[in-house]
Length: 239
Image (cartoon, rainbow, N blue to C red; front, side, top):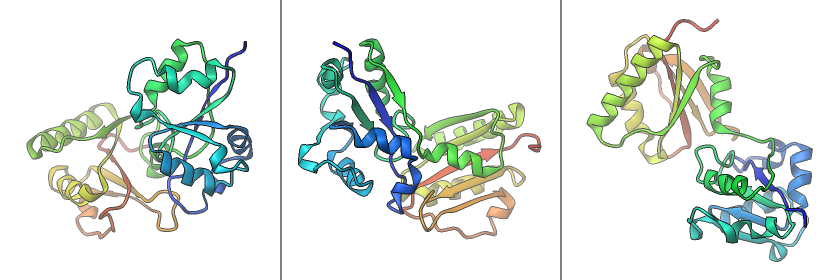
């Protein structure tokens, strides 16, 4: 029996017209599925409703990966082994990128299941594209340390590295701590260092700006409790 495929389905970053952020080919693939793996079943089903999946919600099998945290993930991938395609959904953006789904993807590779990434939004890549910073060399760090002393040290290290290697550094923060992060960035980094902040990407309230730290100190931006990506660059001017 031929094995089914594991389809990696990018999820909308906001509730604003989610259908327009997935191309027709991706939608066609999603519409053909009956089995899904997700971080949370409720939000996965909401997304599937938003993109107007033709099947009845009661006919869809959505399994939460958090309940199957072993390295094998056999139960999650069993439909693939039985010959059926399975879709892996992120909470937002691209599965496996700043997302716990990478473990399922690795398990699929080990079992000889074909992995197919579908086209759709990624907040990290969209923020980098819109930043004007170096897109030839960049690093994504996920969440930076919560401890103030460790955070100060980390930010200084990133700035030094960016200056020495012309690397763009990207990171995220829990939305309710965005203001704390912004204060730390504007207090710790050098005035000439560039900081880009991409807030609520793809939503009606999207706000993406790249300014020097000196300019940010004179600028207001609505960050509190809003999803955002932060990028810093202290290297040579990008051409």
